[in-house]
Length: 275
Image 1: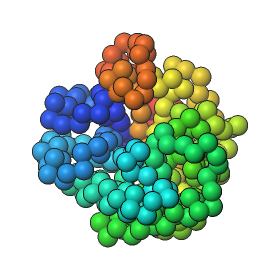
Image 2: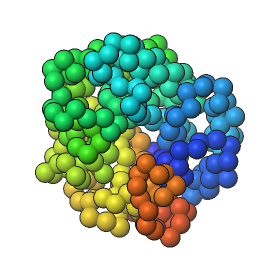
Image 3: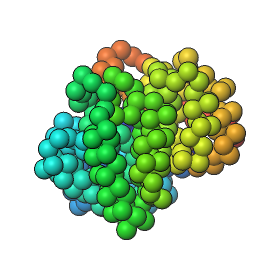
Image 4: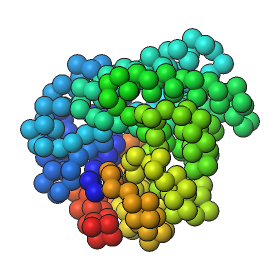
């Protein structure tokens, strides 16, 4: 098992100002970091890659799509723009040395129609992700698609839907990234959902129900850890936690003593259950 820390804990400004944070992440004992790609200029990431290499930290990447990048828009120009945007995020992932680009980018965050996804929207998503997966394959990178809860996405908002979506894409470079935060909202049983997804899962984010320190909330951790063992998963396990430093998360109260405390306690909790 390899252990990672998502840099969104420190907000969405990912640049050289985080170099001391990377040093702390390494000192605490993480094997790598999740780097959010908001800046899609590859040149932005060369110094960041150098710092990661100097520290011996591995890297996987995440990205999202907002209202200006909507892969299931009825506008063909918007769909083309979104595909191009995701290809640029893959170019940045290549600079960073990532083998996965993950996130809920099969549709736009916070964009709703007030109706369920139509079959046409579903097919637009499949076609777009298939093209992005082809490009990812040429770079030796895989996609890790994530479902979010019903308040953030409508194309896929539960395990069954992301499983069907990835199966319909039917591409060797398109897998699932699983996040316990959203599963804790949407699933009857998180462990059963992990077991159903099985080897489609290529990355796991362990997030507490309130996005604070894993192990300090009400997620069914015993069931989560057992299901991870059941599917014989031996890949990346990452902590994703948020704070007021990430305004879009709308967390305005103190959730933990410090980022360092969250990382130390969270990693110790996970290792004590997964080894």
